[in-house]
Length: 353
Image (cartoon, rainbow, N blue to C red; front, side, top):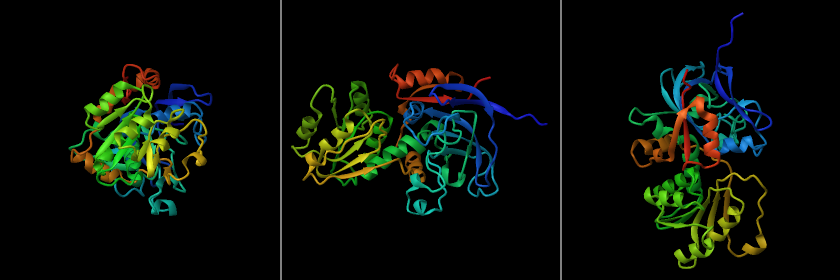
């Protein structure tokens, strides 16, 4: 009997512990699959949510990870757009492109997919990964774009783009972004592209606020732990509040803060994940006529965003503060989860034998 080929992969157990193990190298299951050799992946806050039991759809004993770039090494006979040797960036959402939701652009709600990689099927914190519906979920990387430049395309950059898009930004608008972490910083970058004239970054870490300004992503900053954030934003907007608010923090009170920061008839875009139930006190906001938009990222614009990266209009490489091989991923989780050593994003390079 032929022995099964093995590789290294980071498995999340039912009790939330993680372990780098020998796991089978994936093979094609459906004709629309592709097998990708992972060149670079990341640790994401969503991975932490799975570890802590905050993602009900997650299945235990799966390899974690959903944000990666790599090289296609095998495709099913139903894959038409890709071939072996092509560099690709992955969409964090698995989608068929054909169901009623996909046809409307709501790929997060695909009847045959959704958040699958690293959640319900083995993900990318490994040496190889199987990608279902590969023609939909993989974007070719142009020769002029590096792996690092493309790495964040399919998850946090798409999430930031999604948040900015939800705000219905008009030229001259002021946008407040709660959370200057990876998704929040991407949202600021994308809000500029949509025409925001002024961006206010809010975070309880001064160093991240400083980074937002240094990168030209924020015009003003507010630290809610040091001042009344609602009054500060009103003070910066002639007493009105922000035209749009992107909530990218998912903290204890950031949902409440989001609707307080918005001006009457403004838009509140919720792209954060919450570990606890949130309260919407309608009696307090009566008359504000706010528009709330919520949900997981509908990352339908990867091709468009890749062109923006290629044109030099978006650059997220500065977010990658740490890089180490898969061998050291447990240490990476410790540093990333505890926000040690000024870590924003931890990039995982291939396993070293």
